[in-house]
Length: 556
Image (tube, rainbow, N blue to C red; front, side, top):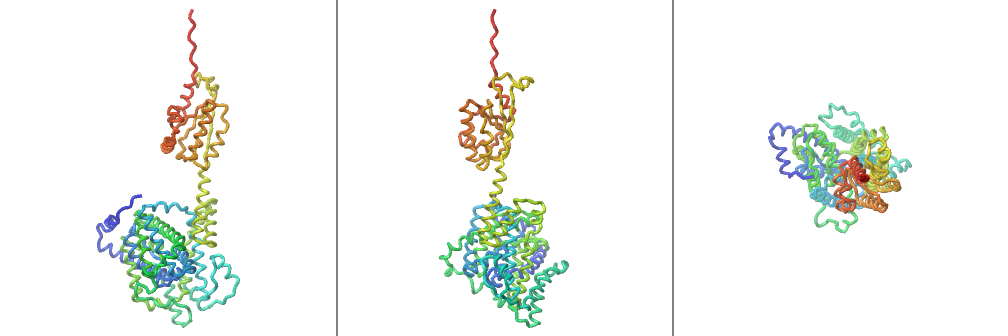
């Protein structure tokens, strides 16, 4: 996959740029900024950091990643999926671990992009992604129950155990806090779509909840001070990088890198369908890598492309990557001008936003489609990934889902079909359809599917008993590939037939398979005279070779 130079992408976007297009970018940027503000605050808290950290992440990613992105519609920032991974790191290691993980993940993503390996990220099956997303949604939802209830319950190693613990009681909800959170949930669920064009439901809910909390004087927990700067006091510095913890954080960093890469490319796929502009995957990964290398030094958390914000930008008429950069400037203005107001936002209001977002982030249409049509393998991998995500470490969940999908896929493609047809030459001769030959049977086997390690057992069983034939013809037009195990199985079949004075012929061999046979020397062993364009030509050649010479006439 070739990476188009960044300057070329900028040239394409801004060719013929006008004041009218700038107005569209500006309006789209303002709209996305309004949507992103509550999410940035909420995901900052949900990541185990602060609301200010979420805001800084959204600002910097909008500027840096937006400027370097592989498509004009990509808008990055803190996301729910990422926060579900980061909160576990923050609980175990602290916010310094989150920064170090983000730094290492950025280096990994940048390396993937520079090596142009972006296409390999897309190899994760959709059912695994759906199950992972559903599991993350539950983690986010459960993680906000404490803030919604205004309580502090003991930590648990998994979201499933945490959820079960709530049913055991042992806590007393703060009902004023609960009403604040439920108010946000109600506003988000019942906010008229016509008004959402001018004021996003999440922002409307937070404004309403904050006004109620301030006017009522209810003692609810608030966000707290928002620094009027993007360079936070709590941040990673060159002097404080915890190099000693790098080995411990390597696996979490790989998880964050994989999640960030997958989310960004999925967002690009959605944006590509909406706009018709193809995402340059490797350039996008380079942008994500650079952004995540920089953000920890400002006190932010890892970022990735966000589907919801990117979709809002597209629907709002955004034309270029200026939409992302203008949305970031909108957030910066909010941080500088509205910091005292933002500081009074109740944590329960953010909990309400995150809970509704968690429910909505599930791919409900994909889940219904999978279960309605009873795709058993998809359901199995979905359920396994979902259960693993909610009960185990997220890295383990991805590995389990990926390994299970790979196993199912191998099992499906390993079903090599061998359709064998025996040509009875004696019967053909009686019907005048064959030459006068000394052979009795020519057997033709039509192979369908890849001949690789998982299919060799089927192949060997199919040709275990070939005593009653003179010639075996393998028609391989439907065999797209062969591996070393397949080569060995074919070699063994040839040797067995040759030891019994029988002939192996190959017909319609795929070019990829032929190259493997040539590398293994099987083309010379079998003999070039035993390779044919089609099975019928091989049958004719087999009969011709066994043609009985006509007896010489008797002299008188």
